[in-house]
Length: 245
Image 1 (cartoon, helix red, strand yellow):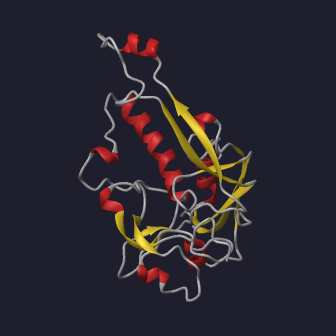
Image 2 (cartoon, rainbow, N blue to C red):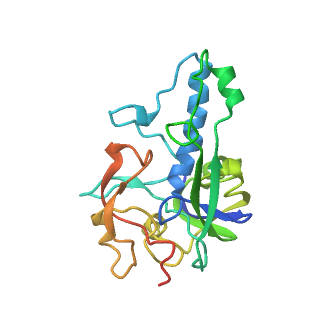
């Protein structure tokens, strides 16, 4: 029988982490991405076309992750894992820029016919120059309750995390996954190392922590796939990365 226990996960980073939201990357989302990649490969090997969760209006089936489930009596269940957070509060947020421009030669090879002019100023093929928020930090930490050997197996091959990974953002130098006997399961499932709220949390779980700093209340995903409408609920949000308390 697999033993699920509190653990601490550290990713040592080359420069920092690019992210869209005001909190870090969810551990269960990272693990679900690896499990789904393996499942897609299996389905393709059988000649099937995998259906993306976001392409369906129906609630997608939950992937089995090597994590414990937190199942409150009067709230939605969620995986016992937090979002990434630097050990020290970041002193600033950097703004990087990314650019994108259509490769005309690639279009010529991919399309049977092209219009005389492809505008770089408007339409879906326009050129882009966009800001990217990056948190400079040397490492990020997660808490979780799960199977440490299986979590290690899934995380070790990941060499970058966050947004714009192909542009060099979020490079992971190495992973350290260790037991955390100093944490009880409730704390490991919900709180950052600094004691702030570490994941999107229903009210029934949030109520078990009296003086914990959170990011307020709003609509967010409860578990992967986080962006699917069926996962969007009114929840307590993780503490913001720029919260210095």
